[in-house]
Image 1 (cartoon, rainbow, N blue to C red):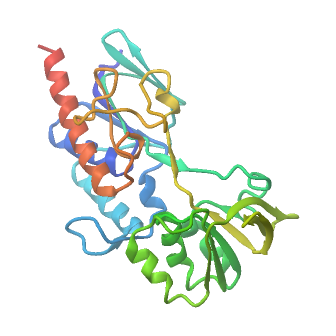
Image 2: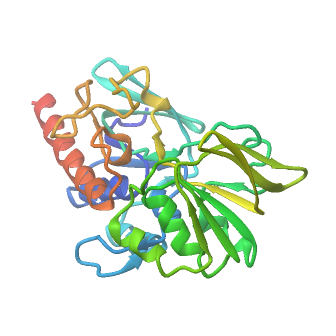
Length: 305
């Protein structure tokens, strides 16, 4: 029978990777499981606010962390999907699509997924003109017209990425003003191919085989806009499906943690976008990943006395 792990880290975004680095340096018996290495870094554009790195991109940061994982001598069970985490006596059982593992502690760093509008046409035209990552799929729309839905950081980062790709960009913002960082808002002023439509609610996506337009409400008037692609950038939903029956969640479905990243179940810690700090920043996720591992190790020392 396989010896139980001291900790299992679920997720390989910056929170999970940071926890893994600290676990490796502490010479722990641990496992990192993730469907995909990199998390949010795989879809992030320009990164200007990570201490010690003046300017980088999500992809470059991912490459650096990949090398750091190799340097610290641990591997990641990439491509393995965790299906459930449950209490099993004094330990926890982590069930995946490839087996089941026993561990004394768990660090949940599963991140978050893009929110959907849930309007007519959205599901029908998924990957047929409807996308949730301009950085991933934007180049498909070279010299075409696109709509970017949203008014926060992810939406305006997408505009910045698409400005030299698309012929025309319509920014559809349901609010009266943007909620993004001011430097992203300021950049819009110099973009001649960008048109902002504030106080507009997207109510439908139209087309035949592929997207041909969107419908939005503004001043109670229904408007149609011809576009070739739609990028929905309205925020993210925490990935809590595997622990929703185990841990206490807040009203936004984030895992509730204290200042030590401890969840409602002793021995289970949460870090990064899935936790209830609710601020999607790399530096916060990395810090929480570090805290989670240190506190998990201290918890382990206590229960093994």
